[in-house]
Length: 169
Image 1 (cartoon, rainbow, N blue to C red):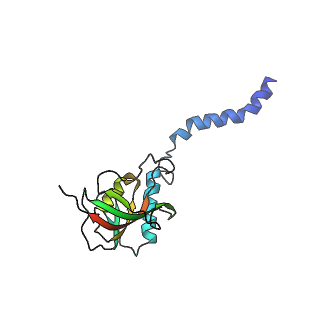
Image 2 (tube, rainbow, N blue to C red):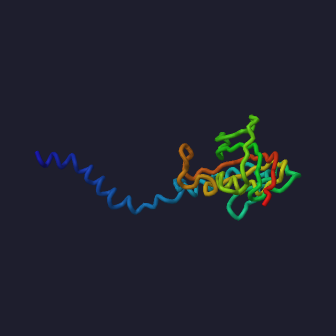
Image 3 (tube, one colour):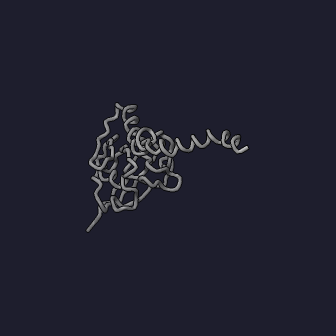
């Protein structure tokens, strides 16, 4: 009876031993399951699919395209920006937008009230302009994500800077 029991358990024991000794040596951190690599590939694929758009890469990793150049004042830290915006996932599904509303977002420029990439993006704009930005996750919600936003999620942002009030010292 004991012999029969062991006979049926032998494949299970061998499978467990195999997994204990051989699977830990597999490097599963690279390849398509690597979230950082996957994010970089998403951004590169977006840029390749939209190669007629001349995005500029900044030192922080933000991609910037002055789609409709503004003719007004240059946005600077502490100015107050009146903006319309749309934030999309890299697959173009919408995350947030006020474009089809009359609700202008009013925020100080580069004071940390917005995600870092959005703050930085405003500093590249002039009043009256519309720009497109690709924000890597390190300039958005990072490796932790936020509520319903997964970790390592890049975004595409359209920002219309409709009005700028200069900061007075």
